[in-house]
Image 1: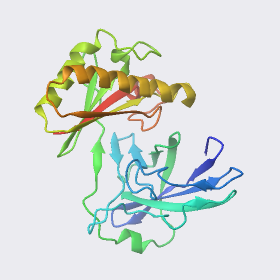
Image 2 (image 1 turned 90 degrees about the vertical axis):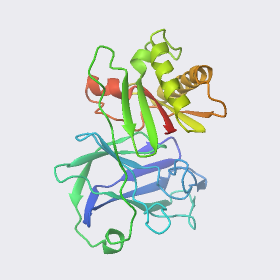
Image 3 (image 1 turned 45 degrees about the horizontal axis):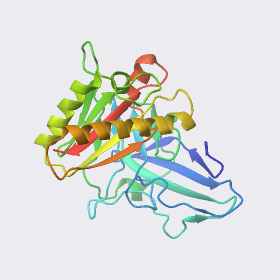
Length: 280
């Protein structure tokens, strides 16, 4: 898959390599006529010369798999290309990321990055060769986040993803906004007031607000729309949250990181969302 005129990403089948570990291999190729600095492209705020921002989505079980981390220093259990971050024209970088192994009945996953459209239906296969060094590394507890389904009810406005320390509230864009618009509707008020109350009751100093679309349309429309919607929610929360000392970070991700299958209308509805994340 080519991303703009510069970088082409190739994704290979996810391999089950044993010891509860799955291995993803990718290649980034420079299709430009000049050197490309492959820095902070896939890190999503982490180590800038790794792909720790790349996730696996198991849409069958509504789970999101984050890269494994080493037990010693909790760094990404993945390639680090810090010594080879400049890609010559026509050159490429091969890299890998290790994840918790999906259940036996999962045969395909979605690979999501912050720098490309999603890679759908990536096969999950048994490894043919040996990857003992990766499989047997001492790693921290796997991080698998449940992607909660929308609550039953008339509005279907909110779903949640919880970890021990963090809350992530997913708000349906279909209720917050009119179609293709970024101005909040009157129906959004009650929902955002409830979110603001949770933030008031939490300990968070920073609130992250992330906008997403489904995969209809194209990036030139989806990316700015998702960012404008995230900023609209930020503006509303800044007015509604009464606790002082809270800062906000708003970002738009277009159709990246789906939480459901984009091939169905119900799935596309769930993917059109604004997510508010903060420490408890």
